[in-house]
Amino acid sequence: MIKESFLWVLRLLVGGLFIFSGLIKVNDPVGTSIKLEEYFDVFSNDIAGFFSIFEPFALPIGVFLVVLEVGLGVMLILGVKSKFTVWSLGIMILFFTFLTFYSAYFNKVTDCGCFGDAIKLTPWESFYKDIILLVLIAILLLFKDDLPQSSPIWAKGIVGFALLSSFILSIIAIRNLPFIDFRAYKVGVNISKAMEPSAPLIYSYVMKKDGETVVLDQYPSDESYEFVEMNLKNPENLPKISDFAVWNEDGDYSQEMFSGNKVVILVSSMPKMSEANLDNIDNLIESLKDSPVEVVFVAAAAEEEIIDLKVKRGWEITSLQADATVVKTIIRSNPGILVLKEGVVLGKYHHNNTPDASEVIDLFVK
Image 1 (cartoon, one colour):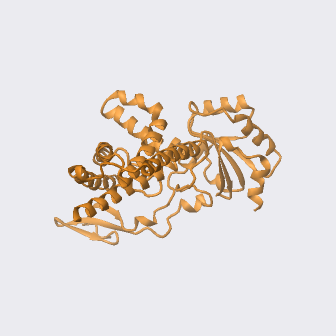
Image 2: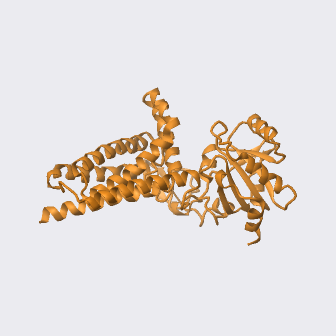
Image 3: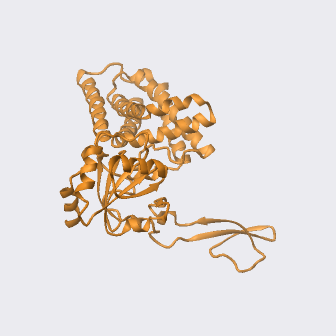
């Protein structure tokens, strides 16, 4: 009885964590694919070149993994195909543990994306989390013969529903935008203010004097102290946004983005940009031409590529460059539309849901 209760608690903990992790990533499968692309790029450079083969397939691989996380979590809790489930979870957590250890030890991918953008973990925190899960799953493997050997039809039906619904939700999130936006650029955020610390940053200073190491709250005026390092004491007050920047050949344009009414057309990659709804974006730009709303084109691309697209589409609008990672963080659509009022995010649109001019203007008058 005690063993059964213990194993039941383990199944709830492990299964629940996998379901939670999977559902967060089902909410944003594009974000998961971006993280996988980072890993594939790092591995192709550091381990073997063949990993680059997987980069174009990062999105379908990401969808498969997040749906599998949810499905296996449900299967474990309901006792469906217990041995297969535990072995599958074991293989998956071994894979994740390798990823998080590699990230932490070599400082390659600083955020594993284990819980998407909802819960940020440092590389070592991610690794320790995976080690704990690895131990729990190892215990389940050790007692796999004591796990349910059969399951009712309704349990298998729930598993099927979980797999199908997770897959459908993933596709909807890809074709639109995440259902819940956990990123720093979500609707309602004042980007300019988010770039400032929430409170004054406080540092401690590690110094050496006469062979002894001391930690001081203020930098000493005594020149006999030798500086070692400085540490931030209140990292929770760091700016939520630290990487926003846009520019063109005339210089930095970042501050100008925080004034007036703006509709920003964002492109994170010219080669991967979808042309499916560019006609709708053309219409939006044309309709806003004589309005008090400025349309700005921001792309992670070379100046020549930006000019070529503007000429091809007939866009007579301001164009700027940006970092691809920043653009991908702002919006999970390529291209995507961002609506700003005095630097405050009023709306975000996937190109599949390109708004008309009246819908955009309504945002400014609310």
